[in-house]
Length: 184
Image (cartoon, rainbow, N blue to C red):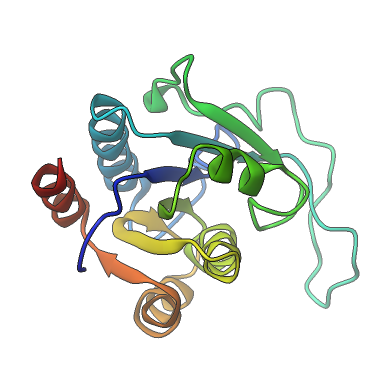
């Protein structure tokens, strides 16, 4: 990792009540702990925080069967460990990527954000698609690899080692915090 831009936003993907209890690699307790640490630091520096949940899926056909699209009450609620604050921006998406039809790009650009740090679940889906979209929209992308998980350990490893280095920079939560402290 090289640097954090002065206007960097943290984007937290799909850490919600219906997803966090599902089996993931690495275990979600460490992902939630690292995410909470980043949230506290970003908020402490007055930097934008975006909390994203998913409440549906893209309408196209797929080979892999998809589950129902009617979610039980509370399934889309953000987990309380995120300690949602009034100044946090919340995005509800209906596709894997947080930028599709959500107004997220306009929100970030209105704040003059030039870089995003992305964390959450699933590494190979919501996190990766959002990172690809951010990169394509011209944002500098940083991914906290110890603050993300995937139901498939191989898919997680592929995204972290093969995909992310091509669209951004990767590092640990502590390395990101160290960069932020140096740039403050």
